[in-house]
Amino acid sequence: MSSATTVGTIDWSRRTGGRLEAREQRQMVADLARVHASNAVGRLRLAVHLHPGRNAYVPPGRLQAPDSPLTRAAGQAAARILPPVLLGHSQRAYAFGRALGELDGVDVDTELLYAAALLHDTGLALTAGRDDFTLASSRVAWDVAEQVGLSTAATETLQTAITMHHSPRVTLDAGPVAYLLAAGAGVDVVGIRSWELPDSVLERAVAEHPREGFKGYFTRAWADEAARVPEGRARLLRRYGAFSAAIRLAPFEE
Image (cartoon, rainbow, N blue to C red; front, side, top):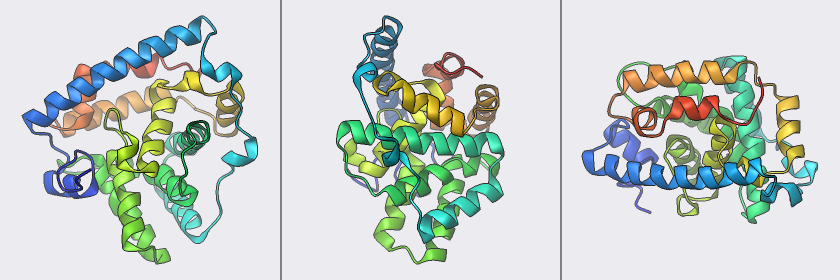
């Protein structure tokens, strides 16, 4: 993966402000088509109770939030910036991403994943100008990394996970932190891959971090982001991904 040219990396985001070229938009639309196909099959399996999650198990202890200077600093920044509805989403995104990592056998730095999950949407509360909101999120992450003396490589991993998380089809080529953050956020926002998780994981995450009207809040926030950056990924997801409907149909009661 090229850091400079791959859509969503921190280097690409800084260079473009998160605005897609025509070629990149076409590739993203193709990625969205694959996501839609996967989602349709998975939701059908969920509806007929033949989904893999019914036989899966993730030990609850594996989903405990890690405790370190980095995660404490990220938690303080997130609590200061995020409204409760987004803070809960961030916590659930970590739990779901970590659980999928356990089921996929992905070895991940849990401190980086937790910090990325807590900070990935801070930009939605700080947006200004015409750049993708994840750039603002990545700046919060940089401040946190500087505060705790995180290495340059780890800081780039943290920031790229954040700036890449709302691209369709983030793969392991982007690294375990980016892959699992995108996967966890996808479960919580639109239910993608929710059929792979045990009911106990889904229910516990929501019980510990209630959704509090998340669907309505996030639909409005995403519409604002799409209008603010018309060449960005948020607008593309709304236009070609039926994103508002996907949020509404996510398999969570509120």
